[in-house]
Length: 311
Image 1 (cartoon, rainbow, N blue to C red):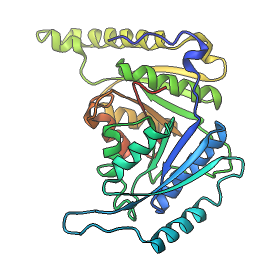
Image 2 (cartoon, one colour):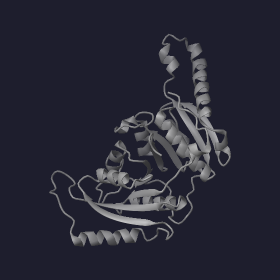
Image 3 (cartoon, rainbow, N blue to C red):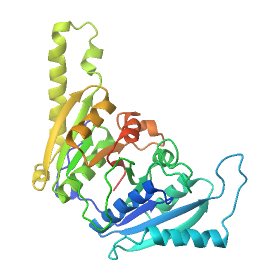
Image 4 (cartoon, rainbow, N blue to C red):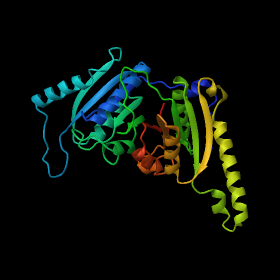
């Protein structure tokens, strides 16, 4: 399905008023908090920091309840880790109890409602194992809003420093989620005067599967035609005014989609990767099928996952 182009400036404006960052006090989640604070300051948004006390973790461990002493300790830790949040960022701290951390995060994001959820990977304390494959991955099965996943290899951010997304890669597969992802990528690129690569990956040219008896001599011509067609479709998605404050490049490549996306990010030393998510509750329904899950696990830069219904 061909996604309609973004036609006017309002189509690529991005409004972020509420940022939610769940934290488990691990180094990785504090790294996510620093980036969440910087983004909240950038967009003049309110930052909500959530700590979830796990009442039940695994089947062999009996349920537990948070005592007043535990609550006081968590409150003290929250004040400590948020002490570097700039004073001009409105800040709310919340401590809650839940048996399933991912459900609590999603519920809080919807209650606010959050415009952006910022979450780290590889935490190991209160969230048990906050990593792709566990809490973060379960959150992404039913994403409440645009979600920024901050991997452990991402450059360290300072909460009081400007957000610097100089090199952005946005992978587009022409699905409905691509429009929301591209809108976010274009808005961020314009606001940070970035270079944006809009990338499409051909895993298997459909023309070859439609014509199994194609002579080898014609394969190159078919591939070239497929690439040209997709490049034309990519360019149609980009409004002319989008290039006023940023540099936009479109490209089509062939190969395994996850490798191609990661390679593009590595080659450009990307600060941000943007992917669309279809409106389903399955992680393997991300853009490029299950590829986005593999890309997010392997990425060394923050990955912004945007649901098709995201504002």
